Image 1: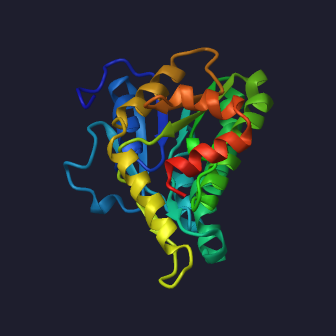
Image 2: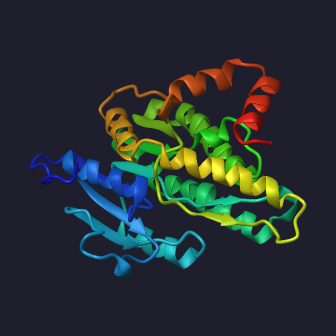
Length: 271
């Protein structure tokens, strides 16, 4: 979808984590649809010409540094669409995760999105129009061993999005969450398992299965298409799962008894 930017301008859009993978593809899709897109990443100076999407302005954003967030918000004072995509991932036993790394992960996956959303909501409300889209994960819907904190951060994002949706719907602001299911992306999992951990072998098995599922998954384009589709609707869905058999997976997760879901997950990940 990296074609010429549309001549019809639809408004402004801010996409976080836009240097690669899902975020880059969303930024490209919105630019092609005619949105004036600003994309963020930790260090835009490191992007090669091939990395950059035509028509997208890149600005630095590092949620671990308050000064970085403040600097971005001084430069981008308003936006019609906010796509909270930036995030990080980890794998390892819950008992071994350093608490400072847990906090950092929540800063990337949850609190950073909250901060940006709070900043841009007043402007959207005063204009009586706007859209906030969160990129969550099906990991926040179904149990997966050794992804405790990643899953918890995405579950928190889901709850926040659903509550926020009810708060702002009377002000012309649309809120949705897109939950990818094993998309072929380059997001790295920070390994938090100790060398002598009694969980080491199990973590390796889970990671091997997870990596195979990611490699066999659809391209990030399916997520970008979902975002574009949501923006085209006056009353978009609150929750949309995307990926191979994602809607079926979402249905099963919501309707099967939790012990069954847990057993199926343990079987899939060889636990």
